[in-house]
Length: 256
Length: 245
View 1 (cartoon, each protein chain N blue to C red):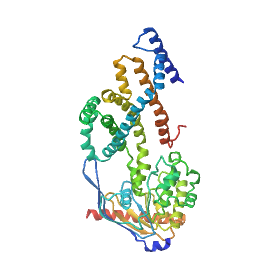
View 2 (tube, rainbow over the protein chains, first blue to last red):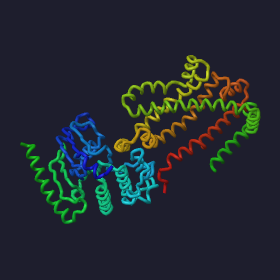
View 3 (tube, one colour):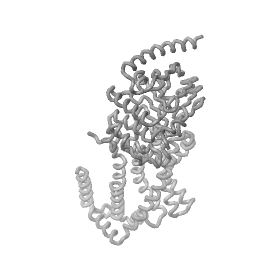
View 4 (cartoon, rainbow over the protein chains, first blue to last red):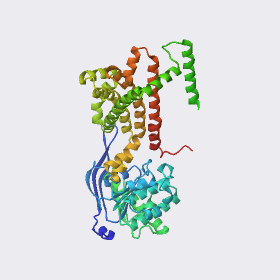
């Protein structure tokens, strides 16, 4: 009944990927992820950071249950209410913004009141429009609204603010913080922007190049989302140094 | 407007040629119009057209239903495509007349055979077009639907069908015209009514006015179907596309 209660009962996200390979065009198997262990407490906001092409999206797809072709184990948090924001908005172009949002909601809730969410994301004037008529920023908002409308207890975000101008991205980050604080939800986000990660996260996971593994984990002091500019900058610098050290250690470990 | 002019020009050429030749074998537009009116009044033309139209609708529906299902399956599943492809090539290269003869010989000169023969002729074309459509389905939207746990009916209605709409429109367009032409052949060979039957009788009597009158009537009917049914449906299906600025 009570949302706060259910979060107390909620299980953490536990993901273990022993091996994951892609099949390349000539049929050989290319290992992308090896020996990756990830645990995120219920209600926490985790961020995966790594170089582009390191398999971040693959990890998210596995966490979402969309890709079962891997060796390992996935224990998803919550009761299976999954909200997902893809790198591109992935809205249905032939349905209006409102239909796009409501279609993703479980049957029986599709008529729920969304005014709050719509107001927070500033979509009010655009609900009757088709995605083709929206700017990228608005389309991203619609995609975020779709992920939150079903009141997820597990949220996955794949570089949701990439290729937006900084002002829009910043506002959207603020809205994301508000939404993830208002409703308790376990969130895993992927980004290559360290500043963004430090702004939003409770816990950071730094990834190595292929085959991907976690080279460094770091918990950040609460509260997330309202850290000062100076504090964010300080943590970013500290993390850069730590990651550089961890990366050399891993390489040295691989050589020996 | 240009279309109206060019149609008028066609009529004029026809009228002048008919007047110059002055033969029973090329009746003018007025004579043909007269035949049409007489046959409408006697009720013969509406009856024969209704027979043909019913066969067109029945065989078109069967071909579309089976073709969509088979084409979708072949477009989505490689294994089915590998098995089905050889059948498809045989089917698509089978002359319409051969199919019709075989179906009539095996099933008999009856309504089932007539409708089936036409449906089989149209089927491979639907399969080929729908297979292309199914192959072009966007895997990213598919993944989105999976992530958000769309139910099957809603996945088909909101994700798959809108993507297939242009392919559906294309094969119903070409489908209607092919189907009604083959229906005439089927009627000519083995049915006691319908436009094809009338054409056969008229041919034996050298009644060119009747042949022209019936074919023109049916062309007009198909034009009506196209502009009152197919085009509005298509406009509805693509209204989300951004209008050109």
